[in-house]
Length: 462
Picture 1: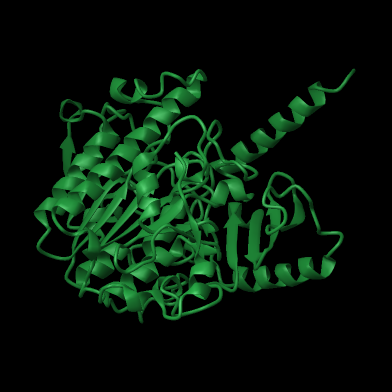
Picture 2 (picture 1 turned 90 degrees about the vertical axis):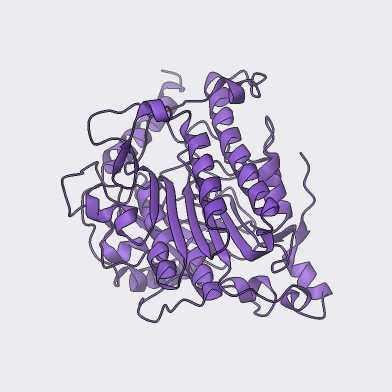
């Protein structure tokens, strides 16, 4: 599907007034929906050029709003990234640097309870709140969403789950608040999460609401229904035909939710964000980016990221300045009139003034990443990005404006830029705390790097 996009910068130059001046007046306490996909590749949506299947509903969402072409998450895999989204703060500030092990009996492993989630903040401001889908921010009861500011929770606490609701032990379960949902009640999780989201919107249409809809698709296990597989029969790669079917489930879900908002006349009262929690996993399509989930190259941290709010945001435009998943919190808080003065520091930025043309320039001076307790790190300032990859143990400098694939290391050509960015990273890093639990991915990073090196070695003549 071909989508006509427009440059945000050119629209601003062509307009004699900010976009807000031609939109409707901001409603009091507008609704907020945050939709998160899991392991979605940068080019696994047709508005980004997907070649083997279409995502018409995500295309429509992009056409109705803003596509953040340089949209980043704060970590290259699941749980830490989600902690950043829901707190608006770099999660390394409070030690949530790694995926937590599944530990329902351990009340020390999870996002600290003194951190304020967006659901908590908006509930205090009079919003009905729901968390639906994958949680992955702690398994002990005190860490679960219905104990952290969400009125309703329907989903699972861990990092992944069987899509048909089948359990692995008494604690790995689908639950509705504290009640276990049996496998017999589940059809297919992606569809069930959409059903629950639609129900929540219908039940709370007369009051302000915040919906956090966190699909676990297209994360493993690779499960799909015949309905979705019938639409990807033409894809001959065995992994990708299922992976694509899982994405179609998300796309259909987004379409159903947007249709519900339209039918209830809520679309212009609802700011909708869509984002992936990290880059695509192996087998996804991250073109034109280098790397994948787990890496600090662009393919691990630069993700599909949209904002749509008809009447209040421009539509069908690309916004090219670097933005962060942290900005979702700050933007939602600002339009809701919520008090964030006690949250220090709040790293996210309210994007509304930038998206309406009231403010110019970049929302962020720099963006930062740290993984494995600092073994891997990166910083982006302007077009320059400095990466210290954990597996490679060397610093590489890239000019993303001219080298988005990160193929040409400029570190030897511009040592002064390397030094400047490293000093800036060190200043940020000095504000962080140590990880609260160990990282199961450290061994995986080393194994993956060894596998690549072994394959290259075997390709040479002996």
